[in-house]
Length: 115
Length: 113
Image 1 (cartoon, rainbow over the protein chains, first blue to last red):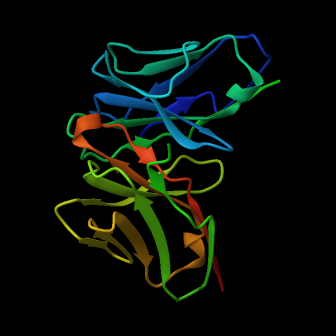
Image 2: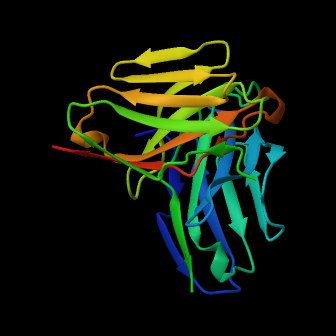
């Protein structure tokens, strides 16, 4: 158990809909990261938050947004869903995330299926 | 652009023997490397890491070797056990990109009795 929790575990929805994925980091970690794993792409970095502020952005679509709340949990919002958004979404956390030499600990993931 | 590459999608090893998983990278700015293990329906689990100032790091049965000039790293598992059967991901990061991890596509390791 990494200490990172994610809900829900599974999500099935229809194209055009909007969903929210939730992540709670390990106790004491200030940085939260979101990654997408699709069949043909491997694990791709989406976005990083540190103590409530966006710190780095990766290959995140404009239809996707995220935020980190004062209690440090984070939510990833996916809107206008398309079939191609079906993937595993992982959240990870680390203590700081500024040095580039930290270990990130991953949650169990949310499996999203868009029909 | 795949900056971290794992060219072997699968590896099969007999129990008790050595497993060697390989990883290549293209970005010379990477200075921290990690290996993760992933079982089906679970998130990646951290195994071992190495900083670019070292060329070897050992933790129990797991050893990671880094060859900066070749931009290559490898994970050695000795002795291999059936419970090691999983997908292994190599990841890299750079101070310039803060905490962002770049992942390879993984190698499926199967350890058979």
